Image 1 (spheres, one colour):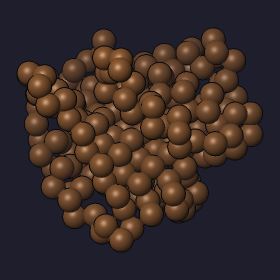
Image 2: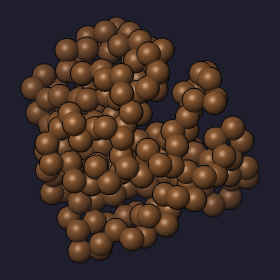
Image 3: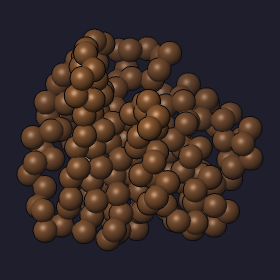
Image 4: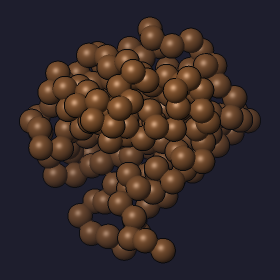
Length: 187
């Protein structure tokens, strides 16, 4: 087995989830790695909505998609992930990806926050179609603190198991508050 980073671990499940023609959302575009993966997986007839609150992040994402020749499959949206319900219909999205925290190599004071992420997760659960999946990478400690993690984990426990399956994993033997990968499946 490979020495997986959290994004590689989540990407494994994302690849299994998405089919050509799907609608997907990258809730936190960042440097565009997940947006690129989603664009490749949805194919020519699919669509990806990618959100970020930083123009710098969307510029990097745009460059990455253009280099790969898939920019026409994505709509890059300068807006908070907490507003994603304004851009997609309920029960229409196959996969929604969240990488919480701050933009790598960016300003660490600009980061996702518990309040907006909880709002975005609530919307994401409605936007997912039956059989859809949320991939959630929760980073905490250091610059990003623990508030977001401490708000999200109890929230996930409240999701009705008749409608959602929440699978949380952890890097059990890694020090310094390793990231927490979570998958949420809509049943």
